[in-house]
Length: 170
Image (cartoon, rainbow, N blue to C red; front, side, top):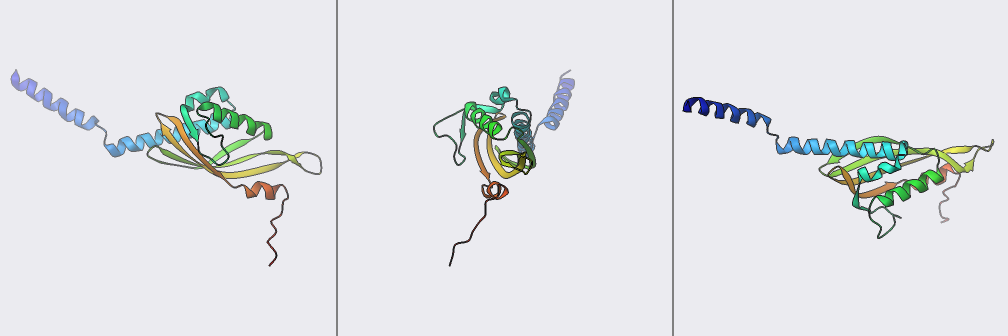
């Protein structure tokens, strides 16, 4: 009997060793989960306009470190406020993810945003399309956005609206 129990315990030990996950596998799984959450945040918030879902993706202590972001304001309300302002300015705004890279709890989203620019009308009086390229660096915790740093090309929209870059006179 003792021999059978020993053999059973050895077999279970061998099976459990096969079931353990290495730190590298655990890290890869976390990075994949974080990338998926960043993708879902972009799709649901910006493309499907599901602003009520923001708390599912954004932590209560979220901080936006981006240039021009409101200072001293924490949580999902920041993202909602920014999204609503963007939709008001560009009613048909859409984000396409070009690249998505993760390293531990950090995710980089390289994106392209397009929308009609009501401030820049064509000859027929219709808003012209406007394109904005940028990158967002997110720090994730438990599948939620905790910190963000956004960088975008601020010159391109001005050029698309007809502004000219004039070099200084020598």
